[in-house]
Amino acid sequence: YPSKAGFSALANKMSRLPIVREQLIPPMGAYEASPWILRAGYTFDRQVLAEPKWLTPGPSTYTIHNKYPYYKLEMAFGSRRIIWPAVAVFCAPTNLAQCLNCHQRPRGDYFHHFATDKDMCRNCMHDELAAIKHCSLSVVERYRRNQLIKQFVPARYCGFFHDHNGTTAATELTTRKELREKIRVENYLHRFARKIE
Image 1 (cartoon, rainbow, N blue to C red):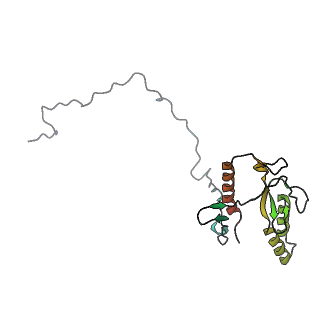
Image 2: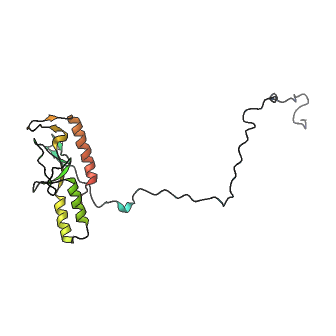
Image 3: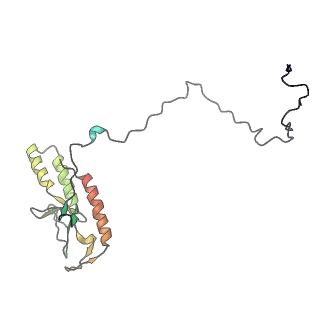
């Protein structure tokens, strides 16, 4: 019959693993008690953290009814493809652009009206757009001036890429690869800035 102790009388009764002797020196951190911090009650010293402001515009602000303009391409039955730059570049020995309002030579990019061959600097264009949005204008006058402003397109002088020195000949200041990359990036960003209404 099996023993009531669960093992036979001849079984070894010593512990399976040896007893670890207590060290005379206590280990590090044994006496470093954590400092006691005075804590307030559950309902005291509590606050509701304000959620951060949502910076993403809502779906109702998207102009889905306006379409992005297409690239201006020139193709010859698949043998040639030219992507025209979004900003018109005028190549001439000297910069002949003159602002329509302030009668000064525009610095950097400006706006050009191809039908009337007139130019407008960015500051005057900004002032014109602000004047159009002013409520003192009538609806008919605002529409007329808005249609006139829409015919001005971005333009620039070729001084960023050419150095004419007053002659018709030109020396390139940058490589053609850098120019193509610049035009490619400008064409891509121009589609987001100007939507077709």
